[in-house]
Amino acid sequence: MGKQKTRIKINEAMRLVKNTYALKPYDPKISVANTWAHESAKCRLIYLFKKLGVEVYSEVEFKGGARADLFIPFQYRIIEVTHSETAKRSEEKLSYYPSECDVEFISTEEILKEDYEV
Image 1 (cartoon, rainbow, N blue to C red):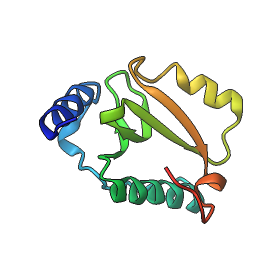
Image 2 (cartoon, rainbow, N blue to C red):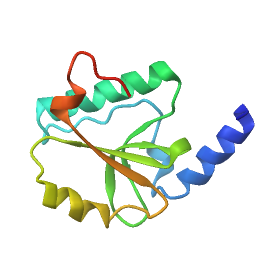
Image 3 (cartoon, rainbow, N blue to C red):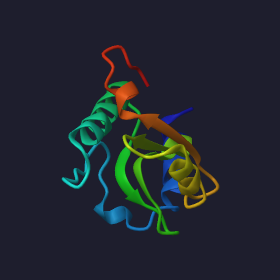
C-alpha cells in the first residue's frame, strides 16, 4: 500500500479518537498509577512498533469514552497491556471499545520476555 493510502487509512481510523490534537505517534504516556512492569511493557511495544515503522499511539481515548493502552490506527488495532487484570475484566473491557477495532490483550510477562516480537 502506498504512503498516501496508508495515511488515508490512518486518518479514517483516527476519527474514532476523541482528542487527536493531544496525540503524537510513538509518545509514551506514563502513569504512576500503573505498575512499573505495565509501563515498561507499554514502552517496549512502542519501541518495537517504531522499529517496524508502524505508527502507534499511547493512552488513546475514544469517542465512546474507552481508553486504550496502545492504538495502531493503520490496523484498527487496540492493544491492552495486562498485568493484574482478570480474564473477566478483560472481557468486560471489550464492550467499551469501538466495534471497528480488533482488541488484543497481552500480558506484561509476555511482552517483557527477551525474545518477544510484535
